[in-house]
Image 1 (cartoon, helix red, strand yellow):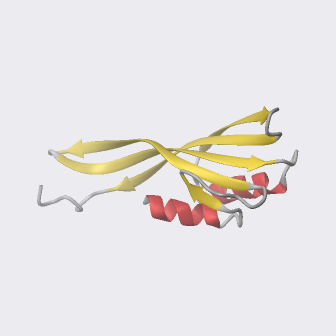
Image 2 (spheres, rainbow, N blue to C red; image 1 turned 180 degrees about the vertical axis):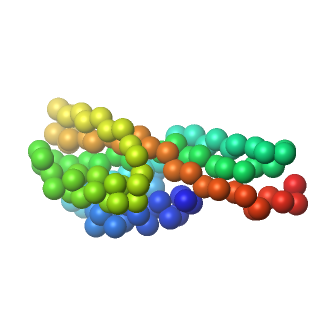
Length: 113
């Protein structure tokens, strides 16, 4: 799965999505970013790419239905995740932080290396 494909999956939740940042006009919204990328090699050629991501869901509402919708979309696409929730007393935001990994097979993409 490419990063662009992952972005389209997040958009299935019908929640505004930003890559790195967003200028939200209302809540809830999602911001995602890459944390790291790892490549696996076979015979000196890259064969797989693993991108570790952070997806942050911001809301003002406790038990927000959009959080369940986001989880449902990730489950539908068989994307496993860890989630941590925090409350920011200053902004009064509820912050749901997902950590996950997407994988892409690079078999054949770098044969000329």
